[in-house]
Amino acid sequence: MVSSEKPMLKMNQKRLLFTKLPLMAFSVLMVIFIIFNLYIKNPFQHSSNVQNYPSTKRFNLLIGILTRADKHEHRHFLRLIYGIQSSPIAQIDLKFVFCNLTKQEQRVLISLEILKFNDIIILNCSENMNDGKTYTYFSSLPNILSHPYDYVMKADDDVYFRLLPLASSLQPLPRSDLYYGFVIPCQSMDPFVSYMSGMGFVLSWDLVEWIANSDIPRNDTIGPEDKLVGKWLNLGKKARNRVSNKPAMYDYPGMNGRCSHELIPETIAVHKLKRWDQWLDVIQYFNVTKDLNTSKLYNGLNFDSVFNLKM
Image (cartoon, rainbow, N blue to C red; front, side):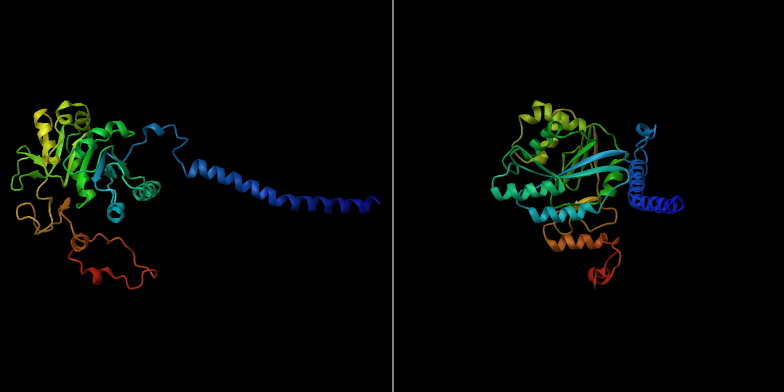
């Protein structure tokens, strides 16, 4: 009996071992998964030098594109245009800015946009062009943003910005008392002569805070808004650092004899893109789709022949 019980005991032990193997393997995999999440996916999480880990971004910029709530399709297009751009030297955040919603359709569709993209600012104002929207935009930012920016831009929705050249042009400039853009009148090269065009101008954060707190802009909000910004800064003796970036910023060719010229490689901004063929011309000229890889998924998508690229 003794000799027959030993083989039986060994068989039972083996069965028990094989029964436990899946559980043991699962436990080992779980341990490996936890280690991977702690150390591989977050390699700096347990480093004693986390706080000193250098950022490659040298400054941050908020671009607020003033637009209207109903322009859903155009916002989606601009998300494509800017979503494929970036800069290694700047953290650039883009927000679409409009006033209070007035229709249930707007509330529903824009709620969906916010859930998906989180790139919208709704100001407490009635939609307008020259009745204080720009003032409301700048003056609201210090109270509604979770953190300040080095620079804040106000931009139109008919402008194509090339973010890398934009960031490169801002990088060496002062971080305070700065007013940057395309000076009006068009033929002038003097940034102090008047004001910066509404196509897109930049203020340093200290000037944004000044607009929010000063009585000068608060009491003068009605009229051509971009012109008013220049007037506020002059009255407040602000913006000692002014930069007009010509010819890199301009209107689309043929739109205005003095503010426009032909597309150039050094472009930062092209303004007054009112039609789809104009947008297509700009996309084509700057070879915006150059990073698209060929694939069997994209039958017949040959950009060299479709766009007849100029560059």
